[in-house]
Amino acid sequence: MLKSVSLDRLAPLFFLAPALILLLVFRYVPIVLGFEEALYTNSLSQAGGRKFVGLANFLAVYEDPVVWGSFKTTLIFSLVVNPLQVGLALLLAELINVRVPGIAVFRAIYLVPIAISAPVTAIAWGLALDPNYGLINGIFRTVGLPRQPFLQSPDQALWSIIGIISWIGVPYWSLFFLAGLQGISSDVLESARVDGASSLRIFRSIKLPLLRRIIAFVLVSDTVINFTLFAPVYLLTRGGPQLSTHLVMYEAYRRGLVYGDIGIASAIISVLLIVVIVFVAFEFIVLRPQH
Amino acid sequence: MDNTLTVRAQRTIAYGFLFFILISMATPFVWMISNSFKEQSEIFRMRPTLIPDEPHFRNYVSLFVDFDFHKHFLNSAFIAVVHTASHLFLASLAGFAFAKYNFPLKNFLFLVLLGSMMVPLYTIFIPLFVLVIRLGLVNSYAGVIIPGVAGAFGIFFMKQSMEAVPGELLDSARIDGASEFRIYWQIALPLVRPALAVLAVLAFMGSWNDFVWPLVVLRSRELQTLPVVMAGMVNLYRMEYGVVMAASLLSTLPILLLFLALQKQFLAGLTVGAVKS
Image (tube, rainbow over all chains, first blue to last red; front, top):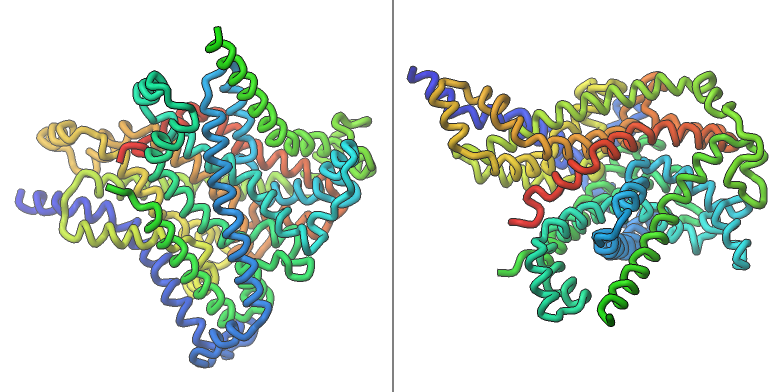
């Protein structure tokens, strides 16, 4: 009897153990491991090539213009793509939250991009943006706009990638906003409307504050996803043309898994982790609930 | 009078926007379907055609004959199903513990969970790969599935909905002599079905569409998942666009069906704990 009571008291710990142990091993251990690996020269291809080099890898990362460039490109990319996607997603959610006949069909179709994987999206858009035969240039030609090089131009490639990933990102995040908007009680909105508040005013003064938690969640998740963007770059541009889409994740992949230089790749990824944490912490502080 | 006019104007504008969104969301997908039935030469015509002049199924046939599409489809399906089931089990169990019990170190363990949310898999993929090698899990499905199977988001999400389960229900089961696990399995779990549906869709989609991790972990082609194989098709057979489009379409179907089938539950479930703090 006594035994079973104490077992029951331990039950929650048993329930937590599998998940927490896995998180410990596969989230926390790799952080330490990453910083440790970054202190060694370590090539996957040569056996016994592991040698302690201190901070040499971090120094090499610091001095390498390609790595530096990849951080700069990633930063610019993030500063554009995150506000853009969150803003448009909010707008889209507000638009499809209207109650008009046939809205269910609209919602179903606008969800389509979410179902399509990043590689598939990249492949399809890569073809659509083809300078000669692509759908988009076909449309441009029809309406009399000049032909654009898109992914083949160093000036347009990064913007093209931003467009491509937003095609998935915007509807995906708007789903969370839509759920939030639908959770707002209609009494509150109705009484505001009776008081003569405009739609814009209602959105700004009632809906936005109520969506604060969701906005914070979406912004943080989007930031993390975009800092670690990989598939479109890998599939469409390989970082080019002229390194214009050379994002950090692709550089880390190239160094670590193509050249087998785990030390440098770990140093890159460790720095990236710190940058992401700083960004996320900043966003949390800015969007923290105000009491 | 004036009022109905503005309502009508607003409605027209709303429909206009919706239509624009509809076109921009659906066009690439429609175009993808159309291209999958086209000959290569027709895809590369200067003026793109919406309905193929000579529609045929050769791209689809080639997919199964030349690329073993069905094998990779099954690989992806196996990984996604195992991932989803284990993810739901671990997350709901941990969420239940956080929502319905008081135990030593609860706050500390919650912080551990919070912290891991700051560390997404991809920001540690290089050391994680090293770890997977050391554990001897490289080139195995275990290596693909296990590192991502526990996630902080899932646990939070389940904790939110588990909090709504009435404690009296659990207590009366306790009085009847049910074990704690049985209380979780037979009473709490059925009550949070909507939340489980949402998490299932998210988990399945995440796994089915994952590209980086299988690319890194799986070394042999027979084991490889659909997204990675499709990426390989683009690189090696850059010209076979029709086949790639056919593959894209077929690989999207399971998610699309899942999504349309669960759309209602999905939107309802997302609101769980979303607005109320």
